[in-house]
Amino acid sequence: MKNRLITLVDLGLDSSFDASMTFVQGVVGNVNAGWNEPVIDVNFVRTRDHETAFSALTTPSTVLHVMAHGDHSEEPSFLSTDGQTQVSLSALADWFLDRQWGISSGVVIADGCKTGIGKWQRAIRDCLQDDITYIGTSTVVGWYEATVFCSAFYGALIRNRGLGKSPAEQGWDAANRAISAYETLTDARCPYKPVVLTPSRRALRSLTG
Image 1 (spheres, one colour):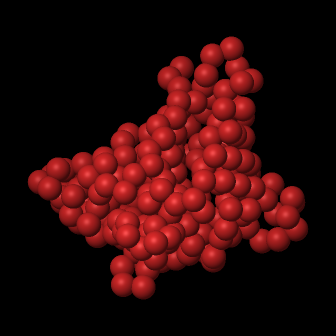
Image 2 (cartoon, rainbow, N blue to C red):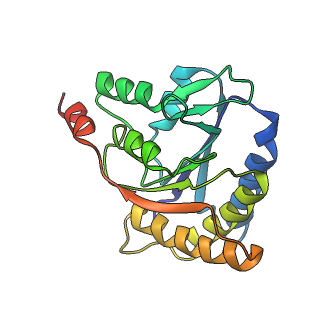
């Protein structure tokens, strides 16, 4: 069976995200260590360049995992700590329109603050090629919340090889298992929430040119 592909994107090269990103890479490495051959392949992209970022965000993957600050003061955007790198979802949607392809991962984890609110969900839909499981956050999160949730999520994702389930369905199942684990471990409500999103009318028009 084809390996799952995880695309990890760190926008802005921030030292504040190093611990979380290193932890996620370690979790994936430990998952692979339990098999005779790797079951997860990883694309790891750290960049401030917009063209590189857009290419990474639209790489066909099982899971697209983006780490950055979530900003929605003007429009939903991924933002670096110093404010020098900003990738807005509207710009990504325009890029999608020009090229007729967009986000094609079965699962998208927007690992930043308040990326699960309606404004973010609506903006993401303009960038989609197909239905996805979108995992955003309902509040402000830090490295602790991210590492607890993500370790449980990736552990749940490979509990079986996903026979009979689409990547989006596998992600939905893993997210809910991770939420349960998070709340058991921390005795607190999990800030990560999954939702199924479909391409917007604008995204569908982009695909047809």
